[in-house]
Image 1 (cartoon, one colour):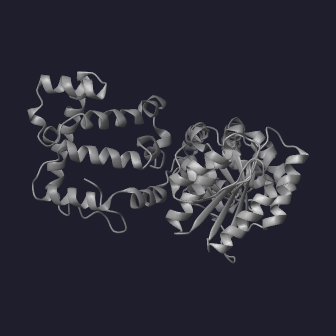
Image 2 (cartoon, rainbow, N blue to C red):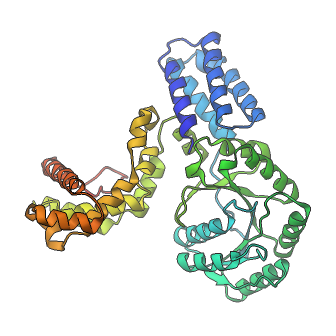
Length: 448
C-alpha cells in the first residue's frame, strides 16, 4: 500500500532534506511535486488543497525559519499534517457497553464485509480475549450465510444460524437475544451489500440498526476503488450514524488515496485496514505509523509488535541455546525460521515496515518474492529428518529425489544449500559476539 505515493514523496522530500535555508521558491517547487504525487495517488482534490495550504502556512512561518535544520523541519511538518489528515490518534473499537457489544458492518457488494467480520472476530478473540458470535443478515447473495459459517469455524467464533427465507431485521433481533442468553461479549452482524447505493438497501440496514442499536457501525470499503470509496463512504455516512471505517484490500492498493481522503470527507476514523486475504490479515489503523511508511521512515513499532505476537519464543530461545552450545544451524532450523517469516506476512511485508525502504530502487523491490520462501520450505520438507540435520550427506542422487519431491530443479536445491552454508557461517561469527542471543532492551530475542 502507498508504494507509488511513498516513492514519489521520498524522492521529492529528499531534495529539500539537506537544505540549509528554506525559501518561498523552493517550498513552492516542493509543494507542487507533493500536490502532483497526492493527486496521482487518487487523493480527493479538496483534501489535497487543504493539506497543501496547511503545510505551506506552517512552512513559511517561524516554525521552519528559526530551525537549525529547516529541511528536516519541513519534512516533520509534512509528516504531522499527513497524520492529521488521516485522523490524528489511532481509534480502536469501543466496547464500553453492557454485553453483548453489537458491531454492525455495512458496505457495497464485493467490498469484503463477510471476510472482515471473520477477521474482526479473530482480532477480538486473540487480542481482546472476547467471546464473539457472528451472524449473517445477507439473505440475497447465494452462499453468503454458508461462507460466514465456514469462516466462523476457522477463527473459532460462535456462528448463529440464519436462512435466506428469514427477514434480515428478525435475524438481527434473534441473534441479539441469543447473544444475551449465552452471555456472549461481542456480536458481529454481517449485512447485505448491493452493486450500487440504493434506497431499498439503505432502508433495510437502517431498520437493522434501529432494531439492535449497535455501539459500533463500521463502513467496509474496498480501498482499490479510490475516489468511489470516498463517495460511497459519504453516502453511507449520511444514511447511518457511522462510527468508523474499515479499509479492505489495502495490500493491493499502490495509491492509497482512499485512506488519505475518507477521514477528511466523512469525519469518521479509519479503524482497521485489511492487508491480505487470510483471516489474520487485519491491522489497527495508526495514522502516525502510516504517515511514517508513506514518507519512507518505516514502521518499527508495528514490526516489533508483529515479532512479539507471531514469533514462537520457545523455538527462538531453543535455537539460541543450541547455537550457544556450539551446535550447528541445520536445515531443520532454517525451515523453522522460514515458517516464522511466513507467519509474519513474508519478506515484502517486513520490508514495508523498515526505514529507508522507500529509497530502494524499483527493480530491487520487485525482486523480493515471497514465493521463493514457500519454495525453500517445500525443498526442506522433501528431505528426511536425517538429511535436514546433516546436509553434508546430500549427494546428487539425494538432491534429484528432493528436487522431484518439491517440484523444483536441482539448481534450486543447490542454491538453498549454498544460502544455508552462508547463514551457518554467519551464525558461527555471531556466536563470538559479546551478548549474543540477549537482544536489546525492549526488543524480543531474535531467532538467530
